[in-house]
Length: 360
Image (cartoon, rainbow, N blue to C red; front, side, top):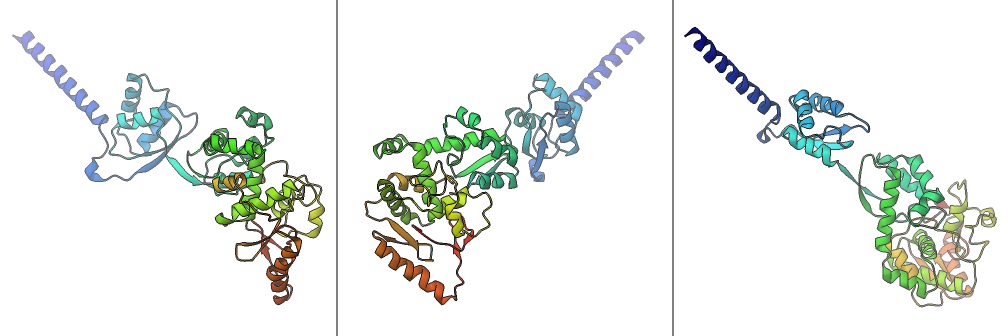
């Protein structure tokens, strides 16, 4: 009778222990809080190279899971404890540990919306990405100037300038510089449709030359409806072998531009100096948007050879030098005299310049 009683007690103890263990597991695998508690979202960063144990400790410290050891067992039971992805995760205490683990395994990280404005240069794009902590600035600039790397992406140009399509992107923080560059180049390929590539051949331009011309158009005006007219001037000059005489190309070729374009700069030996050399510069001077690319491909039919700023964001176009000189007198010299010889012009990238000559 005593042995039977002991056996019953042992069975009861084991059963109670089993129930307790089951309840403990249920407790550990349950969310810390319920949805009705409206827990706040937390951004948790799993560092590059972090172990699963380190990630579990971080989650426990942030009170997103109840038990580090239970979370480790959950990962090991599924054989996935070494397969988590680093990055930023948006989590809350109402999420079950299994749900949190699922996010870490699939790499569902936070994506940040980043807008790259049209007409930005590689270095300006690098500044934006660095400011938003998307990628390393120095590495981004280095790779965009690495001819061998650029070639692996199907581009034969010396640099990626002109091939980084300006758009709104969603990137994880951080993203490798090579992946950011690849994404922006792939977007340009989608924009440069077969129709546009065929059009480039029809007007005897390579894609590189189209992007080069589009970048100059982009920097010359912010007025969308003027771009085909600006393009017409440059196309007509190219046909007549007249130098483009575009200030933005000169500025791009200067290593120490101080905000003021001086007359001596127009004789600078840079290959981007379109006052000194006829034809297109050797490559894009910025990264153009779709409207400027379209304008480069489809200039309006005209005999325009000149344009000058009206100082209101638009330009006056002329077909002859006589007409152009009259426009310069009206919009540049006369207002200049009225302001007691104190006149400031804005270059297309928003910087100030005290010089205007030639085409623009």
